[in-house]
Image (tube, rainbow, N blue to C red; front, side, top):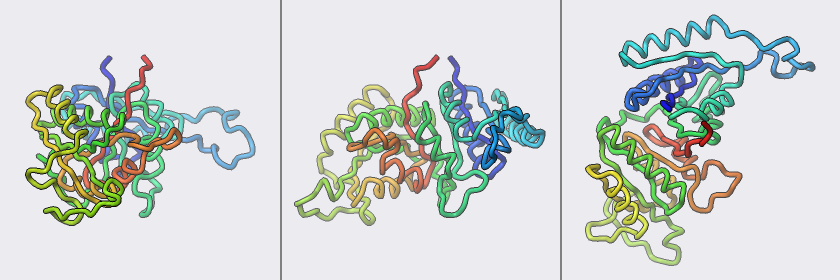
Length: 298
């Protein structure tokens, strides 16, 4: 089944940036693009009666015009891309989570309408990144230009979630025609009780010095990727920092994309995004792919 790339569009700058990136991703995958506008019932909050007794609201003409205009602009940049637009009577976050059941990828912006300075991702993006049934690409406004030929970056920690992320990252690197960097973070906890030796590099984010042996799990991951993706340039790095999130956020400044799992080591059932994933989704300096497994529903 040719699953679509889905983007939620509400007319905000963040959602329009997400739609642009979704079009590019759909083109890379030779998949259709679905632009979806989820809208809440206007009497859905604080009304002492069942709003649905009055009927489900009809799609609005203004929203339809916005969707169609966005589709025309994207079609002009990606000729031949199949683009469908649709309004759905539902909250935007819940709508995108439901759409993700049958999607190849869902793309969300950093903030939608009603965002404020302290909310880096926004409630809709946070909901989708945590609960989607397929991979989610989070498009954040970069601190500076994202390197066009920069590598795809992914963290390796030996967890099942990271293993899935590595596979997705390798596929993304092949699609984009760039290298893949597997990063293992050597944290203070890993070195507890030991004197950390100085390393070359900037701050706490430093590559393993020449001749240093990579950790066994990094070597294993490198061998697996080289076996499954022959021809892909893949390298390993050991980063030393006080936290894995800090190290990967710093390293993302040189990447074109960073891929994260939903949970790393020590995750628990109620925590759908681990602390490292949360740090990257909120602070990475390039787009972030959250590696949810695909829903098996037909």
